[in-house]
Image (tube, rainbow, N blue to C red):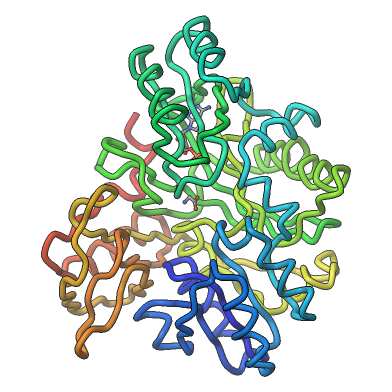
Length: 426
Ligand code: AMP
Ligand code: GLY
């Protein structure tokens, strides 16, 4: 089979690395890809948000048998629907199901209607009413722009002043554009043991009939050590989540995963693909913080290296709605991904810095914002590289990953030094 993966980042490189291990995959393509994907796939220089350009490319390349649409934005505009209409087989939800991520108002209403545990919330399209609500509720309080905002549309506000400023930014100044026309205002959840909270990402394969959780992972959203600084797309991940247990798995499966799959079916929005559950462990049990309609980035970088089953077999089983027939197996042990980012990220940063790479030992470099310029590897984005290492334990994996980081350099490179330490310090 010849497989096209749509997307540019670390997640897409990680998916390609897993597909490369498949006995059934001949040739890989990546639209648009980066310097890492170019080593194992043919990079295709087409803007994947330009639906007619994608369709033109695909119709001119009938040798492509299967297409994985990995990022949220092409999913939200219905790229899968368009490709399926051309007779192509795809991995990823259709537009009417991708809304579970693309509209937070939709997902909050879904959870309310189907009794899926989440933070209490109200939805507003009127600034004055939202302001009144915030003043009545007080802080801490969480504001979420309804639409997609590159993972930055959520403000966790410690005090009322912050909340009022945040509301103005989102609804009046349109800091996230039209994503902020509607706002979700919700209760601030607290972790059971640790502050600010105990979060876990659980990704699941689903074909609308069966839902199968993958191994768990934990992200580090803030830019600096100790969960300080601004929210980012994710500065590193580790797997598995240390507080995960059989009991929690059962609770999440029975009260969150299955009900979500059934709810989407009941709404006529069957979800097929990878459904991502961002969860928090609270004193009232596990609650949904967010849904994503796709693989997480950088969660995928620590999950797929542990997959023993052929990823292509799983993708096709999802497409053909026979996921129940497949046994999905994982390696024992742990995996850690340390993200190396451009100086200044997640705000402004300079691209085009030359990257030098020393001995990385057992670690694998997953490329995100990299390019080749004049024969040299250079930075081309905010998150540049993910340094991924497996180990017997998280401690073992993180040591190997940080050892490899020592040999990598470019001007301004920044990273967190505490990936994999979460939940060990109160
Ligand atoms: P999201 O973009 O929805 O993943 O939100 C970004 C981050 O904001 C989450 O990973 C949480 O750390 C935090 N967050 C979102 N909603 C809440 C909530 N209701 N209570 C506390 N923290 C939250
Ligand atoms: N790492 C969080 C996300 O992919 O949204």
